Figure (cartoon, rainbow, N blue to C red):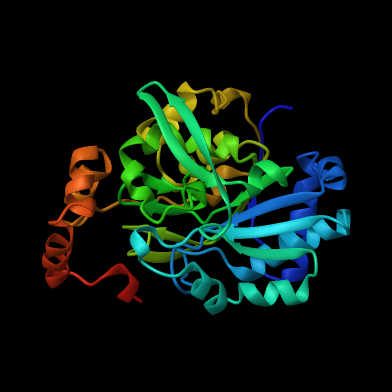
Length: 328
């Protein structure tokens, strides 16, 4: 199929939003695949210990997707999951509780909420143009899942410029020290998304995160609904809506090199992008730059996070700034 991206103003009413999801499923010709699937995985962005506008995917948005899937296939098994906070920054089990995701299991018998850091994993070797990388990935995706859906929020990110449908899958890595692989992030993330069968993306664009991210920043109301059958096309179009050219985003350039981005002229866009655009900006703060240097350096990552100096360095930094978990 050609790469299709649907761009609309998000519906406020949840019944209308569920209908919007169903209509996007029809446009993407996803109905038959849902009807034949036994199990699917939905990945919200839950990179914080509680709900925060522009930072985490809304529970009610995920519920609308679940309802739409069950309307098409009442027997479908739906997994919703996320890994523990990187560098042990927070408990995802507590985040599920705080944001009400555990209530979804009670409401929908088909649904299971899972901590991806607590389930069995499988070692995978991923080849990149910079060499091979060994990672642990949850076995669930290989043994049970037919396809996966990425449900990000639109936000700027102080390390990767934007965090959208590809970046969302970094939370699928069960290792809380997954930051040790940040220096390979640009090469890995699109390949990880492909291995974990992420074929579709649906944006909870009620709010976006501006100025800085992925946690610290300013929430702005954008009211976007975007759905696509191509993560590459999705990230290209949503980046454009945010005011960023995809070629200036390192992991999207690498995704293009690996064949995961269609050409812009090959993307069928349904909806008026121009009327919904909201130019966002990334402003990195002083403390972002040491982390950014480590993000692209294996040696600096080991120094800042894995050496004997890691704790003293972090304690020194938090004299001048609050810990992200303590913000808002």
